[in-house]
Image (tube, rainbow, N blue to C red; front, side, top):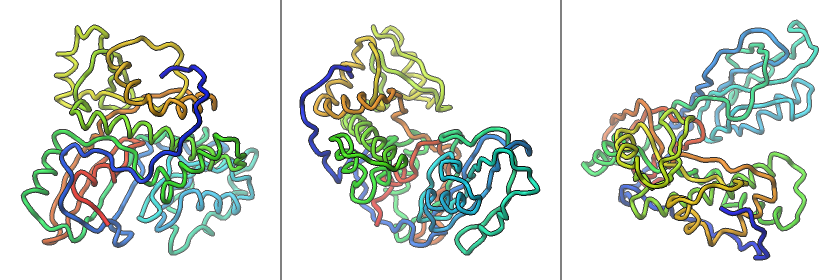
Length: 357
């Protein structure tokens, strides 16, 4: 993705989109989130707060409540600006989700903390408040544990085959529709913003730009799903280990493709796709040429993102559900349990099993 300037205007991104299915479009339909208790999420922070410091970590379970809305309420209770309340990741509003919030209280001793118990309500349960030395940064958590019930799906051999295939191969690591806002509203906001409209709210600006990057990633992933290359190494592919952090480049001349593919086949590695932004001068490889070909129609959008001084990143093309299990609670109620690395969407896995409503 070149950093060259373009005079081409931004064309509104098509919405809604139907990204390609890795295992064929499901023929069954299920109800998702019939009850909030059908969608349980527990954040895997990856570390324990140490018990001292000027940051207060709040361990909270929220029901049918927006993450950012709750963060703003926490700020009001603490008497601090909204920017001093942080969380590692957004969680679904419709569901029962447990996560950490961090509040920066510089110079305040523990004995003068706000009365955190005032947060308690039918929708909000505070488990504990613990001090820590460091700020709770965005994206610091390891992942999330899920327990999801799909209702009205009906047991069948087709559903069982899909579940078994996902257990072996995973699923395309698409960004979920919630990333794009109601009816794709975040994409429309991004268009207005990149055309010069001033958006004062930093959170909304960030969500708008993220929605465009996510859209472009999904577009590339969908094309690689269509040609069955989402789990096939291409010479020069940037690959990611299953831990979700370490990366390396496959040889541009394809000398190591057999070994790389062997590791992809046993789920040790996965190819990655770009999160658009400034990339400098990357080497020209078969993989980069293919990516540029797919994303060429969106070059004005990529250049607009570069102009926002966003740095390019990579994201795994494969969603890998750890500890994936399922059982039939009833004849037409399927319960799924699994762990996903941060940034992956449970809805991306579910869409490969069944359509939802």
